[in-house]
Image (tube, rainbow, N blue to C red; front, side, top):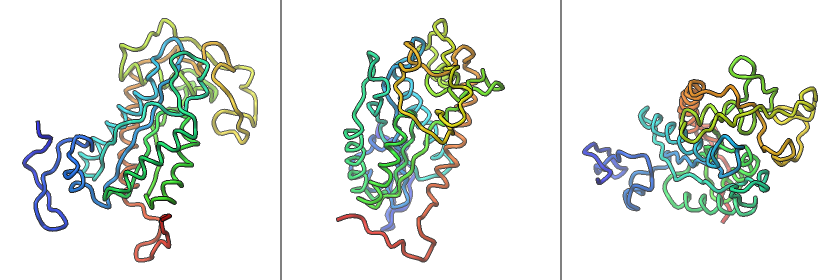
Length: 288
Protein backbone atom coordinates (compact mmCIF):
# COMPACT_ATOMS: atom_id res chain seq x y z
CA UNK A 1 0.00 0.00 0.00
CA UNK A 2 1.38 3.39 -0.97
CA UNK A 3 -0.12 5.32 1.97
CA UNK A 4 -1.51 7.91 -0.50
CA UNK A 5 -4.99 8.31 -1.92
CA UNK A 6 -6.34 10.24 -4.89
CA UNK A 7 -7.32 13.29 -2.87
CA UNK A 8 -5.05 16.25 -3.39
CA UNK A 9 -4.24 19.59 -1.87
CA UNK A 10 -2.44 22.58 -3.30
CA UNK A 11 1.18 23.19 -2.32
CA UNK A 12 2.58 26.68 -1.72
CA UNK A 13 3.90 26.62 -5.27
CA UNK A 14 0.44 25.89 -6.63
CA UNK A 15 1.07 22.29 -7.66
CA UNK A 16 -1.14 19.47 -6.43
CA UNK A 17 0.21 17.20 -3.70
CA UNK A 18 -1.27 13.86 -2.62
CA UNK A 19 -2.96 13.90 0.78
CA UNK A 20 -1.68 11.03 2.95
CA UNK A 21 -4.23 8.63 4.42
CA UNK A 22 -2.12 8.01 7.50
CA UNK A 23 -1.18 10.65 10.06
CA UNK A 24 1.93 8.66 11.04
CA UNK A 25 4.71 10.87 9.78
CA UNK A 26 7.15 7.97 9.53
CA UNK A 27 4.97 6.21 6.98
CA UNK A 28 5.80 8.95 4.46
CA UNK A 29 8.98 9.15 2.43
CA UNK A 30 11.36 11.97 3.26
CA UNK A 31 10.31 14.09 0.26
CA UNK A 32 6.62 13.39 0.94
CA UNK A 33 7.02 14.46 4.59
CA UNK A 34 8.77 17.67 3.56
CA UNK A 35 5.95 18.39 1.11
CA UNK A 36 3.16 17.54 3.58
CA UNK A 37 4.44 19.58 6.51
CA UNK A 38 4.08 23.34 6.77
CA UNK A 39 4.87 25.97 9.39
CA UNK A 40 1.37 25.39 10.75
CA UNK A 41 1.71 21.61 11.11
CA UNK A 42 1.54 20.22 14.64
CA UNK A 43 3.68 17.18 15.51
CA UNK A 44 2.54 15.05 18.46
CA UNK A 45 5.11 12.97 20.34
CA UNK A 46 3.62 10.53 22.90
CA UNK A 47 5.79 9.85 25.94
CA UNK A 48 5.11 6.82 28.11
CA UNK A 49 7.19 4.55 30.33
CA UNK A 50 8.14 0.92 30.83
CA UNK A 51 7.89 0.44 34.58
CA UNK A 52 6.50 -1.55 37.46
CA UNK A 53 2.75 -1.09 37.97
CA UNK A 54 2.09 -3.62 40.69
CA UNK A 55 1.01 -7.25 40.35
CA UNK A 56 -2.13 -6.49 38.35
CA UNK A 57 -0.97 -4.25 35.48
CA UNK A 58 1.62 -4.65 32.70
CA UNK A 59 4.96 -2.89 32.63
CA UNK A 60 3.76 -1.13 29.48
CA UNK A 61 0.82 0.62 31.20
CA UNK A 62 1.99 4.23 30.74
CA UNK A 63 3.33 3.56 27.25
CA UNK A 64 0.04 1.97 26.20
CA UNK A 65 -1.94 4.95 27.43
CA UNK A 66 0.30 7.54 25.78
CA UNK A 67 0.61 5.61 22.53
CA UNK A 68 -2.99 4.47 22.04
CA UNK A 69 -4.79 7.52 23.41
CA UNK A 70 -2.35 9.82 21.65
CA UNK A 71 -3.09 8.05 18.37
CA UNK A 72 -6.84 8.36 18.96
CA UNK A 73 -6.46 12.08 19.62
CA UNK A 74 -4.41 12.67 16.46
CA UNK A 75 -6.77 10.65 14.28
CA UNK A 76 -9.81 12.50 15.65
CA UNK A 77 -8.10 15.87 15.22
CA UNK A 78 -7.13 15.03 11.65
CA UNK A 79 -10.72 13.97 10.92
CA UNK A 80 -11.73 17.38 12.28
CA UNK A 81 -9.53 19.01 9.64
CA UNK A 82 -6.48 19.79 11.75
CA UNK A 83 -2.96 19.70 10.29
CA UNK A 84 -1.65 17.28 12.91
CA UNK A 85 0.84 14.41 12.68
CA UNK A 86 1.87 11.57 14.96
CA UNK A 87 5.49 10.76 15.78
CA UNK A 88 6.58 7.37 17.18
CA UNK A 89 6.14 7.27 20.94
CA UNK A 90 8.97 7.22 23.46
CA UNK A 91 8.74 4.14 25.69
CA UNK A 92 11.97 4.37 27.70
CA UNK A 93 11.81 7.52 29.82
CA UNK A 94 12.40 8.76 33.39
CA UNK A 95 11.10 6.03 35.70
CA UNK A 96 13.73 6.06 38.44
CA UNK A 97 11.03 6.12 41.14
CA UNK A 98 10.57 2.46 40.23
CA UNK A 99 14.28 1.65 39.91
CA UNK A 100 14.00 -1.07 42.53
CA UNK A 101 11.47 -3.17 40.61
CA UNK A 102 12.50 -5.81 38.05
CA UNK A 103 11.20 -4.99 34.59
CA UNK A 104 11.44 -1.22 34.95
CA UNK A 105 13.48 0.22 32.07
CA UNK A 106 14.49 3.80 32.78
CA UNK A 107 16.72 6.58 31.55
CA UNK A 108 18.46 9.19 33.67
CA UNK A 109 17.09 12.71 33.52
CA UNK A 110 20.19 13.78 31.62
CA UNK A 111 19.82 11.04 29.00
CA UNK A 112 16.14 11.72 28.43
CA UNK A 113 16.66 15.47 28.18
CA UNK A 114 19.45 14.97 25.64
CA UNK A 115 17.20 12.58 23.70
CA UNK A 116 14.31 15.03 23.60
CA UNK A 117 16.58 17.89 22.59
CA UNK A 118 18.04 15.81 19.76
CA UNK A 119 14.52 14.97 18.56
CA UNK A 120 13.68 18.66 18.72
CA UNK A 121 16.72 19.46 16.59
CA UNK A 122 15.45 17.00 13.99
CA UNK A 123 11.95 18.47 14.08
CA UNK A 124 13.45 21.92 13.55
CA UNK A 125 14.95 20.64 10.29
CA UNK A 126 11.41 20.11 8.91
CA UNK A 127 8.94 22.84 7.93
CA UNK A 128 6.89 22.16 11.10
CA UNK A 129 7.36 24.60 13.98
CA UNK A 130 5.10 23.07 16.67
CA UNK A 131 5.66 19.99 18.81
CA UNK A 132 3.33 18.62 21.48
CA UNK A 133 4.42 16.06 24.05
CA UNK A 134 1.45 13.81 24.82
CA UNK A 135 2.48 12.32 28.13
CA UNK A 136 1.24 9.22 29.93
CA UNK A 137 3.74 9.08 32.82
CA UNK A 138 3.82 11.49 35.75
CA UNK A 139 7.54 11.02 36.28
CA UNK A 140 8.21 12.73 32.93
CA UNK A 141 6.36 15.95 33.64
CA UNK A 142 9.02 18.02 35.39
CA UNK A 143 11.68 17.08 32.85
CA UNK A 144 9.43 17.75 29.88
CA UNK A 145 8.59 21.17 31.30
CA UNK A 146 12.31 21.93 31.22
CA UNK A 147 12.49 20.54 27.68
CA UNK A 148 9.76 22.91 26.49
CA UNK A 149 12.01 25.91 27.12
CA UNK A 150 15.14 24.17 25.87
CA UNK A 151 13.52 23.45 22.51
CA UNK A 152 12.06 26.95 22.34
CA UNK A 153 15.36 28.62 23.18
CA UNK A 154 17.57 26.45 21.00
CA UNK A 155 15.44 25.91 17.93
CA UNK A 156 12.58 28.41 18.03
CA UNK A 157 9.93 25.70 18.14
CA UNK A 158 6.51 26.27 19.68
CA UNK A 159 6.46 23.63 22.41
CA UNK A 160 3.63 22.21 24.49
CA UNK A 161 2.98 19.50 27.06
CA UNK A 162 -0.33 17.78 27.69
CA UNK A 163 -1.37 14.22 28.42
CA UNK A 164 -3.86 11.52 29.17
CA UNK A 165 -5.35 13.35 32.15
CA UNK A 166 -5.76 10.39 34.49
CA UNK A 167 -7.44 11.47 37.74
CA UNK A 168 -7.89 9.53 40.95
CA UNK A 169 -11.13 8.13 42.28
CA UNK A 170 -13.13 10.68 44.27
CA UNK A 171 -15.75 8.49 45.92
CA UNK A 172 -18.27 9.18 43.14
CA UNK A 173 -16.41 7.87 40.13
CA UNK A 174 -14.65 5.01 41.83
CA UNK A 175 -13.36 4.64 45.38
CA UNK A 176 -12.12 7.74 47.21
CA UNK A 177 -8.36 7.62 46.75
CA UNK A 178 -7.91 10.84 48.78
CA UNK A 179 -5.64 12.34 46.12
CA UNK A 180 -3.35 9.30 46.13
CA UNK A 181 -4.55 7.59 42.95
CA UNK A 182 -1.32 8.38 41.16
CA UNK A 183 0.06 4.99 40.14
CA UNK A 184 -1.74 1.77 39.31
CA UNK A 185 -4.99 2.86 40.94
CA UNK A 186 -8.59 3.22 39.82
CA UNK A 187 -8.18 5.30 36.65
CA UNK A 188 -5.08 3.65 35.20
CA UNK A 189 -6.42 0.17 35.85
CA UNK A 190 -9.79 1.07 34.33
CA UNK A 191 -8.08 2.52 31.27
CA UNK A 192 -6.03 -0.61 30.64
CA UNK A 193 -9.15 -2.74 31.18
CA UNK A 194 -10.62 -0.72 28.31
CA UNK A 195 -7.55 -0.63 26.05
CA UNK A 196 -5.98 -4.06 26.73
CA UNK A 197 -8.11 -6.15 29.10
CA UNK A 198 -6.03 -9.21 28.30
CA UNK A 199 -3.12 -7.66 30.21
CA UNK A 200 -4.95 -7.00 33.51
CA UNK A 201 -5.23 -9.44 36.43
CA UNK A 202 -7.99 -8.06 38.67
CA UNK A 203 -7.60 -10.99 41.06
CA UNK A 204 -4.42 -9.27 42.25
CA UNK A 205 -5.88 -5.74 42.51
CA UNK A 206 -5.86 -4.27 46.02
CA UNK A 207 -6.21 -0.99 47.87
CA UNK A 208 -2.78 0.58 48.24
CA UNK A 209 -3.40 3.96 49.91
CA UNK A 210 -0.98 5.51 52.47
CA UNK A 211 -3.70 6.21 55.05
CA UNK A 212 -1.26 7.87 57.44
CA UNK A 213 -0.88 10.74 54.94
CA UNK A 214 -4.55 11.43 54.24
CA UNK A 215 -4.93 14.21 56.83
CA UNK A 216 -1.80 16.13 55.86
CA UNK A 217 -2.56 19.69 54.79
CA UNK A 218 0.59 20.70 52.94
CA UNK A 219 2.70 17.68 51.99
CA UNK A 220 0.73 15.98 49.23
CA UNK A 221 1.14 14.20 45.90
CA UNK A 222 -1.17 16.43 43.88
CA UNK A 223 -2.24 19.98 44.60
CA UNK A 224 -0.32 20.50 47.83
CA UNK A 225 2.16 23.38 48.23
CA UNK A 226 4.91 21.13 49.61
CA UNK A 227 6.41 18.54 47.27
CA UNK A 228 8.53 15.61 48.43
CA UNK A 229 10.89 13.07 46.94
CA UNK A 230 9.78 9.47 46.83
CA UNK A 231 10.22 6.06 45.28
CA UNK A 232 7.24 3.79 44.81
CA UNK A 233 8.37 1.24 47.38
CA UNK A 234 8.36 3.93 50.09
CA UNK A 235 4.65 3.21 50.54
CA UNK A 236 4.77 -0.58 50.56
CA UNK A 237 6.24 -3.57 48.73
CA UNK A 238 3.55 -3.54 46.02
CA UNK A 239 4.91 -0.28 44.63
CA UNK A 240 1.38 0.99 43.86
CA UNK A 241 -0.23 4.21 45.08
CA UNK A 242 -4.00 3.98 44.59
CA UNK A 243 -7.03 1.73 44.91
CA UNK A 244 -7.53 -0.62 41.96
CA UNK A 245 -10.29 -2.75 43.49
CA UNK A 246 -13.19 -0.96 41.79
CA UNK A 247 -11.62 -0.53 38.37
CA UNK A 248 -13.79 -1.40 35.39
CA UNK A 249 -13.65 -1.17 31.60
CA UNK A 250 -16.74 1.05 31.36
CA UNK A 251 -15.03 3.79 33.37
CA UNK A 252 -11.94 3.32 31.26
CA UNK A 253 -14.01 3.84 28.10
CA UNK A 254 -15.45 7.03 29.58
CA UNK A 255 -11.99 8.31 30.46
CA UNK A 256 -10.78 7.46 26.95
CA UNK A 257 -13.65 9.38 25.33
CA UNK A 258 -13.00 12.38 27.57
CA UNK A 259 -9.28 12.31 26.81
CA UNK A 260 -9.88 12.25 23.05
CA UNK A 261 -12.47 15.02 23.16
CA UNK A 262 -10.24 17.20 25.33
CA UNK A 263 -7.15 16.41 23.29
CA UNK A 264 -8.78 17.45 20.01
CA UNK A 265 -9.82 20.77 21.54
CA UNK A 266 -6.35 21.29 22.98
CA UNK A 267 -4.66 20.67 19.63
CA UNK A 268 -6.97 23.13 17.91
CA UNK A 269 -6.01 25.82 20.40
CA UNK A 270 -2.34 24.92 20.21
CA UNK A 271 -2.46 25.34 16.43
CA UNK A 272 -3.80 28.90 16.88
CA UNK A 273 -1.39 29.88 19.61
CA UNK A 274 1.30 32.48 18.99
CA UNK A 275 3.51 34.10 21.62
CA UNK A 276 3.06 37.62 20.26
CA UNK A 277 -0.11 39.35 19.01
CA UNK A 278 -0.76 39.31 15.27
CA UNK A 279 1.23 41.97 13.47
CA UNK A 280 3.82 42.32 16.22
CA UNK A 281 7.16 40.50 16.04
CA UNK A 282 7.88 38.21 18.96
CA UNK A 283 11.42 39.52 19.39
CA UNK A 284 12.68 35.94 19.60
CA UNK A 285 15.79 34.51 18.02
CA UNK A 286 16.78 30.89 18.35
CA UNK A 287 20.32 30.26 19.54
CA UNK A 288 22.80 29.96 16.70
